[in-house]
Length: 233
Image 1 (cartoon, rainbow, N blue to C red):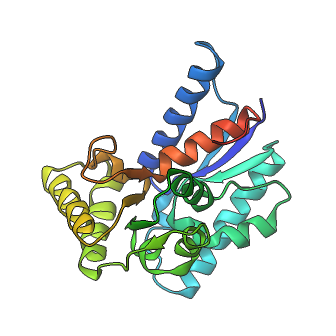
Image 2 (image 1 turned 90 degrees about the horizontal axis):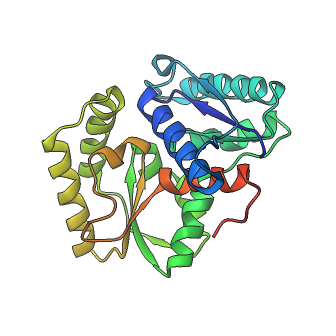
Image 3 (image 1 turned 30 degrees about the horizontal axis):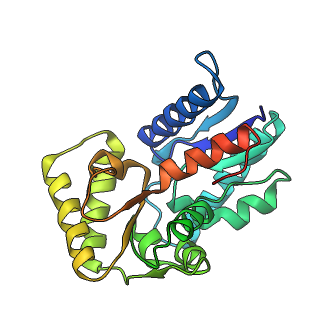
């Protein structure tokens, strides 16, 4: 098996979800005693969560690049960034190291394309929903994305940052996400992209009014395929 590095700590909740899911996949495919050879650097999210301007993003980029270099130096043969929003820094981090980085949106786009869905709604943090760095990779796969609803952006940021990232799950959040997904179905979306690791804590991914493509599940499956040197699909 190949050794994979992970930059975690965009919330400890996210890091735990990634660790658990990748290992469960490896165990299922490799046998009851198998586990994933992972090198994890869990960053202090207190340094990264209040990013508001270019100066903050520059600082975040420096933090992630240094983390990636340490993981590469420790023997990682490939890398994942355990957060959708931090893929804004993908190009910068990729340029700082020699090993490949598995881009989450590329695998989400492949999954949508393989499913035959042509239209989807993206649900995640503000920068994932409104900026081009994530959306363009899905559009490049032939997926038509519904425009973001600013009211949803505000609600999701509150749920994600004030609740889920500190491990808090509420019925109000579950109801809010259910309403959002129902509305997107009425607006013509054929599928939902759940583009925030913690959102599956309040969304029933396997039983919803629309097919839900959970970016974390997809990313973890891709990570396991890479570790086992298997083709995705």
